[in-house]
Image (cartoon, rainbow, N blue to C red; front, side, top):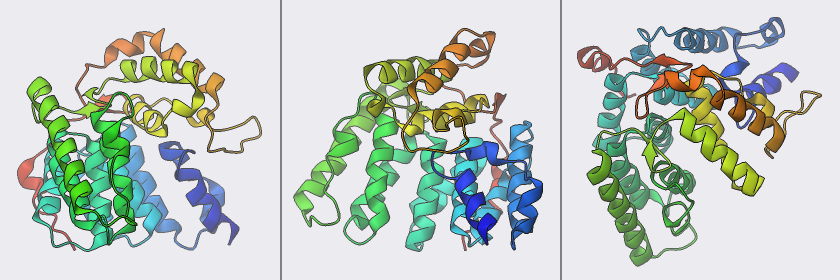
Length: 297
């Protein structure tokens, strides 16, 4: 069915992201519309600053077998989930013994959450699985986004699955841990970082303008995703043409216009560097006891 393909394309990759919601009338054609609607309602609640239901996102992530919905639940957990529920995710991830797809899903949550103490767990998991799990190759670029302002060895200097090299793998683990330790000394191990510094949408906008000016190829789509999730500013036009078609290549003028408008607005001063926000709303720490009720599958 055509719409079954269209809906995932609206919410995935560099396209509509959280702005694929609320659901529209044509989505009623989806055979699993009810499941998509549950996801849409969870996103809308967080967009409106209602974080009371975020502990339940882990259960929804846990029970939904549709790979795209699970990915969106994972991103939403990391972007909008309370620290309490994401600490529960970290506990489950660190315990190990999970299936590869479940472990990969949790790694996406932890990356989107972005607290520095997730890094040792992510890189150690990469070290264990890099030869046997094809998804492992996507962990180092995410570590690079957390730890490096300029793209460097954390992003690039890792052996791929075709290279069985214990010495190189151990060297990469040590490289990441050294960078993590450096940032821990500077900011503390519970700091929320993006590109090697405390998360801050104003800095992301400034840095985005710099990257776009130097070369559009330097612009990382994770910049758009983090900026959009924190501010609630629709950045679909970064990749959308005048006919509504999407491209994997960023449109520099459209992206720069949004960044410049944000930097010139009073909204830029509504965000405290190092603090988490979702669609402009501060994310509360949450209830640790309530978070513990959600076990892994």
